[in-house]
Length: 565
Image (tube, rainbow, N blue to C red; front, side, top):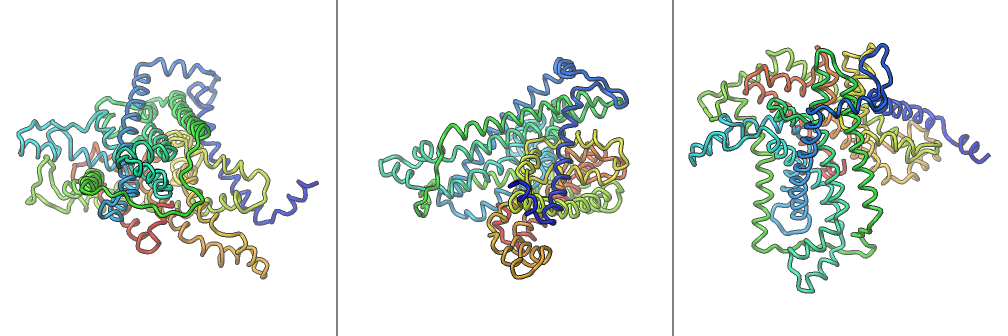
């Protein structure tokens, strides 16, 4: 009886939104389930047979698959160690010390979070490739070193590029906790005679360990699933990871969906294990960093070391932002790139090629902008509906919706792209932008959902209830009260999703067909077909659009919303 009364209390608009949320859940579950199911079937569509774990046995006996697993693990460990050391140190410097120019440094530090690691890999090819890398040319001219003293190709280069571009993940996960942490324990440590470094090592870092661990797990999972950087810096030289091998077996004359699904299922399982491990660690220890007592955190006085801390942050900004964008700009203006800057050879023809002369690059820009603009609006709308069902409705089972729509956070994009390929390849939607749009939304709707949830939970339900009590209907309350108050969160969510959709590569490269190229796919194709200047010009166009959106957002909406997103 109680359950029946609860059902009757649910409003019609809640049932409508509940239906939309169920549709989103069905899409997510379909893309994940089909990969797991295909890993137990024989290859082929018409009459597949159930093989059980036979695919796993066959696949993982192959030496090249074993090598790919080893490469994935080793690169992920290296990337995680690199990004954690840099990210935690930068977070501590900007949150807890008196380093100069902290506000500017924070903005510069998070820029790589928005840029494409694939574009970063291309930029470092022009900086550190043997014989034609600008840094190699400089080292040879200045110090007489060999022209191949730096070699960006292979595991070292992959770790370097992924490390500098994944550092903001650790930084953003850690800096918030450091800022909110009660400084009483640190002050007590220093009062007992401990120095700054001893206090930081023995008090501060253990207290923020959950945040650091979160960043570690995110970076490890992101590195294991990263596709663009290994594709650019490893695959051409025989260094394959699981993500690139999934793509490789699907490019054969006879695509092996069973093998691809098996490797994808392993990536998915590894991610779930990491999440479960993280939850167990959190349950096993107490980490109280914010007490009920009011406090004002005082910056640690580094004295003369504050300029060394400033230099450390500036070096990161140099290698992660300044050098990549600068070299892309320089190469994009050269007719021929041979590793040295020739101002007499500057030309704008590379941009004319990318923007007007080449149909593939031109359509890539058009398709990416269409998907990014429309897709971000749709994803924000769906994220808002799902979030309202979870936190503002009385529909039974709403918390299961939260669980299901959170699944893509732990699923590599290459795996969801494979799932979308299997689901849609025999439907009329295949070969259209609609498939890419659905895949993007399924993969990244949790990003928008979490951005909007923070703003919605900060909004008292009494405001909406007062509007309804005054006679306003559901639609009027939504447009006149709820949406205006959620504007910063919605805008931040749209901005973040726009950037993600614009630079997305793994799912795009799995699902594109002739006539549905997007910028990342066109850029990948150019690696074998275009000159260095044309590739750099196209990469600059993509990075320029992303940075322009960030600047516009910062000017029109409060900048803090970027971090909230």
